[in-house]
Length: 329
Image (tube, rainbow, N blue to C red; front, side, top):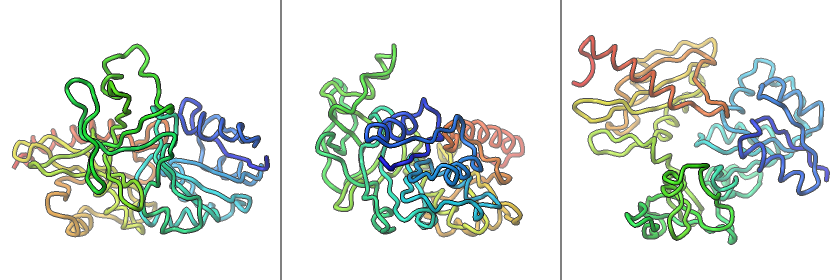
């Protein structure tokens, strides 16, 4: 009953309504509710109301850490900080561990009523960095091949093999409202929820590799945007965020376009990014870079990188390059 949980994501989002608010109420705790996310107001609320647990998306933490007066906020009441919703770098987890004594993460999605895998809530950075944790007996996870034509689930794949992350059990949603076609693509006829996430399982738990619909396939190779994004975010002195999308290419079928957000008051050039990209396998290297000014990376309403907007901007960038004969070669 001593828990105070900060809820600062939209109430329509499963993290706000189910994971944060209702779970806290179920255990007799209190919720500090903000009607809209604001980095400064969120940190102020922690100190003003002695918040003990903060659970946010990575972009929300990044916006808070970017505040020039971040160090002045009183966060001493926090005992746990939890993130979810996006792949993050090792540097992110280390920074999170400096915010609260214990940290944790897991895989969660609206269609599964929230979290469905869990790491330990711990001070051990290695444990949280290793994977997205483990499932629970009530809601077992399996890695499967594509759904079959008859609507049944694909074969279960062995540990270590890449496939689609699936769950079965009482957490699965009933379906998309008035959309039986989309529902049939998400829930197999034998009751397996296809999350749209790609990953594999080993002794350390679930390893997430990206959303199936965001995978980029240049010349038949398979690229998970998070791998490329993490590579550039490792330039942590200069890079605040990165979003990677695929764009149509006449020769390669699809090529990588990287949107890289600079940190305030730093110089960053495309030449530096190209040099850093030499650390990537050749087919993973972006063909085009767009430098984004500080604070201008497009985010959706739950503070995730808005890949739909990035794809639109990438199409505009490619159209301009084509007019100059600098694409499709």
